[in-house]
Image 1 (tube, rainbow over the protein chains, first blue to last red):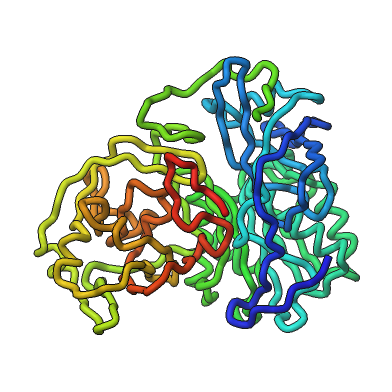
Image 2: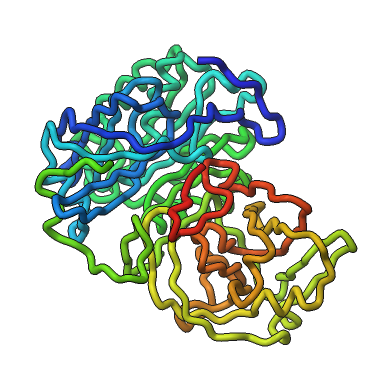
Length: 264
Length: 196
């Protein structure tokens, strides 16, 4: 892959523009991810590749032609044709209960993508811009951040990375193995992980369970003077609260990249 | 050509002929923003239209004095949700452009916080767009664009810029923020003009 030239006024690079289109996909693997979510690996032979942080539209078609389409963040990136999703069960939903409880290996779905060129991080493009990268996730908001962490590790990218991950209990941590691998590789790809448990902390934890506060946030992110590029993903109340606190703590939130899900 | 998904379709959301293709009706109102939520008060707020002849700026009270309308419209977000029959209050863009002289045909809509989106002028006129202050009987909340957002309900909702601050008239169409990040220049939900 060629590395595009930096675009100075944006502090980022021109995306590798892959035109989104429809692709036929087959479910290749399913596995529980957390008690309420499932990892789904899709085999998409015509997929053109995607950048860390991008998403796709997934469309299901019933035998009578009825269709439903939803957007999902991709937990994978790169040029491969196997795509990883992690779908959280929305109990009164129409699509997510089907994906979490019913869809099986070999089933056919359609996907449209790759989508979105804003909530994206690309490795090895920061030679002129050594801003550290601060990732902040609430619950399933971790999904689009995981491929950023993995691409950073795989590229041995020297950009300092920190991830603050807010979950309810230890069982609610997504992509535990992948995050652990990134922590272990910090010598070549600097990465620091803080997990905040709101309801129950792991046994033997030195920090008791408790909701994220402005003070715990302040302790777990790069200081404002570092000028980190911030990505925040989670529910709308989570993202709004985090961005408000970051502003109060003196962070420049003008170019924060945020993804929210759900209503206010 | 769609792939049929075995066993799908058991629990369906209500359908309605006001729902464009690929959309699902929602009861709540999802919040979609690319960054932080700006804080703007009515006292701070102004709206500016800049043209080849200069700028015209209205205060909060001056915009309201142009005549506030009640409109009930359906909104359609490119992320596949639609909300039908929303009650809005706002001032028609026809009323603002009646006080502006321009022969330029394209608009770049600007917001506090730096967001931009493009709409051809013809699509903002003729009773098709408003500067909106209230939705569903209450002033807009900050995350939904307070104190004022553009309302262009016949296009996908990213065109209805939150925290709207003005319009820059242009001689040719140019991409705004999402249009530069993978989304369609026009955005008609009935034609599913979602992406590039």
